[in-house]
Length: 377
Image (tube, rainbow, N blue to C red; front, side):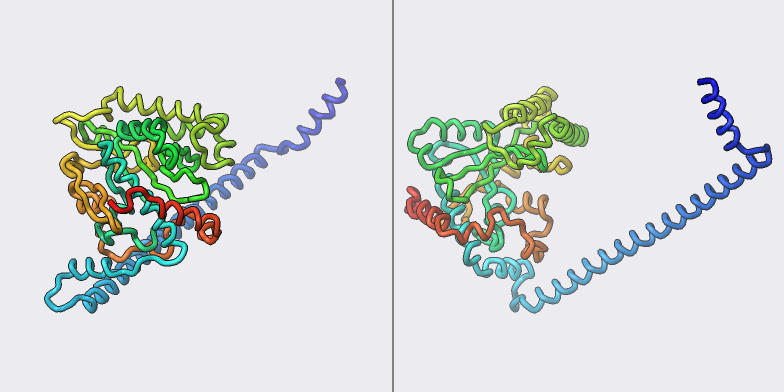
């Protein structure tokens, strides 16, 4: 054993520099390498700054060219004695409706929305057209031609009432089902209203809103912080990888009880800190896009005066509820809604177009449209 250690020790000595001069030479070489690396990093940093500046200028040029083309196009489109805004409104009102499979799913979703609107009216449930559906109401008087779903907003308490109604009303439960869906990709919880027939892909997304007692920058930052912590908590769970692999899960599926408890925990934190409230008072500032929803960074908040009282406006061939100042809310979401949109050909498809070519699915949609109990109202 001693001889083994002696051989190892001798080997280490043989590898060591033979003099102080050798050590100094090694240090000089290391220092030279560090200097070269520092210089290379400076060069790369300079090139990166140059690339980023070129990207910024390219983006500015693209936006400028788009605006120039838009101004030229609108000036040619505008009639004599017609304002620019009126010309833009006329353009969007005159756009042809979707055709084929897109129009089929639009008709199915519109029929479901028509039925939901009547149920909400009969049972005093507050809801409003939201996001793309609200944009469709204001700009198109119906579906955006390239859209294929319906977005609604509701106060959480009214959603609870709706869920209870659909579970306990014998007639309604025969035709509709409302399902809580848990999304692992963005860690959100949303409600989808569907027809009972599983072959009909038509649906309505209903987004949770809570009352907002007051609003300031500190509350905004804290709400975002709670939402991000909720996301981190979900992603740290031992079941998260399996959830992510399996995709969307409907309430009652594996792990949904645990997922629901985490959403409840953070919602209660927000309530206990008086960031959100279950009910409103005369002092309530507004409503806020619930902690359950998709975007942790953005705050969709609407003051009470801009939201209430709700109004009625046209969507397709019936009326739906819309916020009191829909134009102001849409501007806060999208900016100028009469600018030509960038997603006309890249809009996300919520329902597969191949699926909508299936005759069984076509028949299911058409059958539910034909049996709409509120179609004549």
